[in-house]
Length: 259
Image (cartoon, rainbow, N blue to C red; front, side, top):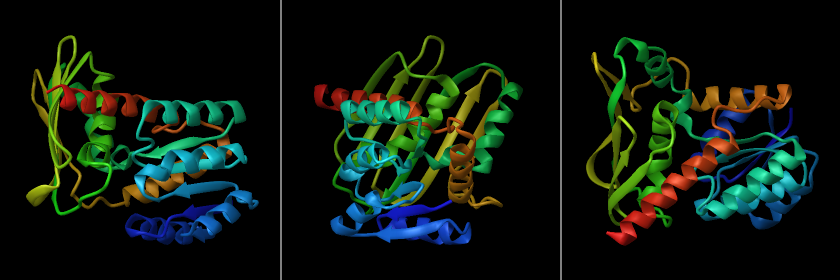
């Protein structure tokens, strides 16, 4: 399988390493001209690791040219762009997968497998904190997609979203019929934390995203993408899943503006 990489920055270097490790790396691009050449090439699939504001446009153009797409989060910065890409993928019968990497982390998979031990979920809280990782799109679009994706996989879409914060720090609160959740994200924090706790009627389960698993989650994500393209299977973190994440992120931002 021939997979081309668009983006050679901080996260792109990790993708380049893993694509080489799986013997699937075809081309690498870091300029608009190189990207245009890749989109016109005979690559089977594209991995997108560019700045967030370019994700949706590159993904759409890759799908338009018949390439399977694995796009880093955030998938899109508005709902219309996410819907447009998903419609193109469905129309062309192509795999569209988004890099919500914690879904492929061994500890999160184990947490989901052990939910029966703690009974009905009453509450979920998630912290994603760091120092100095400022990005143009703001902390909600940059940090929160992973946590929203995990909470969706456990409770589904929330009935109500309330959020307070700014481009650097945000507290997001979700209401469900018989449960609740919150996400706290900030890049103005003196220490790094990636932790999610599920509180059930009979106990609690914890996911620590900073813990080093036996198999690198990003590698498991890439292998899952390759398998899905070969079997025409919908990925765990599909374009549809990412559209729902985009809807919740949009609701968070709208709530911040209202508060």
